[in-house]
Image (tube, rainbow, N blue to C red; front, side):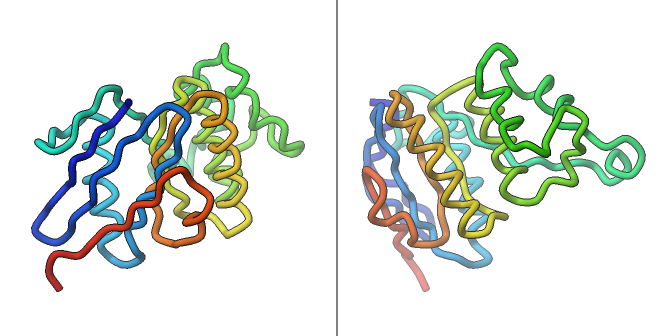
Length: 188
């Protein structure tokens, strides 16, 4: 067991109890709306072991698949390339560090800020998977096809002994996961 959640309660919502084990994908449905980002950060910090919650036992910290953010001045004058991003954020000995190059038009010199939602998210996902197979992720910024491809990549990792928590604001994966947990509002 990687995570044991006995129920997370705040002033505004409740996340029912669940466990995360090796070989499982848990989808936490957080609904769509202005609360999503704040709720996502709150839960991410708990499951990554950055914030303690009395009702959550984290036996193994998960790693959040961060989104690529580039400062404006850097983007204008010296944009980050795919090769540079991987050198800084990936384990270069892992096959996942090179997986982004399977997309034929992406190479080491491709500027990350020129990548659309799907390949940009895959770059971040592959960099994270090059270091760990226990992740927490979202599908923000992707079209439905890109989100599906990202989810399928994660499912393959989970089948090989990884584990994942998807923080989602759509119900698309409700029937394609090990456990589906829905946020419950406590006031409203």
